[in-house]
Length: 379
Image 1 (tube, rainbow, N blue to C red):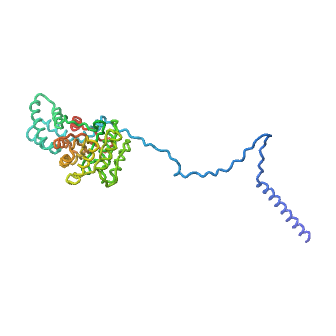
Image 2 (image 1 turned 90 degrees about the horizontal axis):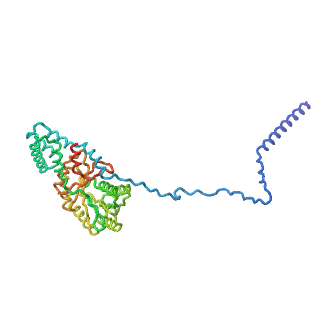
């Protein structure tokens, strides 16, 4: 038995020896190899080892950002607007098509002329202008009809005369003796007055004029912001005051700044007013008087919603008595508008329609042209 114990002991020693050798080999494999020193020759200068990068990155908010200059829009010139707006207006030319249909009948009896009168009155042209137009059409077609005169030609000429092409429709946007022109824009709530001011600024910029806007509608919180957005698009600055502040003060400061800078035109947006609120109307008169301590008002534009019809005439009359309106800007003269309001409002005030708006686009405001308007009505 002793020899058996001896054999087991020798086997255990052998196993331990083998395990120790393997551990030695593994240990040697994990040991890092020493870094060899760089080989140099006499006279070489060794650079010190690089220090670890301990720079802390600056927070994003503290970095200096480059100033981003927005690309300014180039508004469409008025001449090219007329073609596009004429096409849009022609789509709602029910008045012209209706008149042509009636006048082209083989027999123009009393029933036909009565239908023509009804059509004109329904288009908001007004009683007196309607009677004048019907009388002239009767006379011309009776005299010239037998000579083969085209009905469309006669109707076109008489409608143009009714709209009155002799009226001065130019916008007075220049002052005298180097002073800026001052355009005061007035109207009731909801007519699109502030939008019209923004679109007017685009027309002036397209004509290479320097412009300054005055946000004198201090009672509507969004009005100044809305005007600021319009101005930013074309590089026009807006003078504004505190919400609920004195509108006359804002208008005064804007015109004063316009005079000091030597800008071409200052356009003043005013708060929407109800024509039956005497206090508000008196305040509008005050705005105009205060402005003229700096420079004369060269244009007073009354913004009317073309879809309001005869109610727009009442508004126009009251505003004209307060601030001496010199021109009309008709908005929404498409779709539901009846077109005849152009004739009626000019007769009511004795002042011309100077601008028409036919859509929601930024350049959907154009100078009014009598012949182009009639051609659009006739389709």
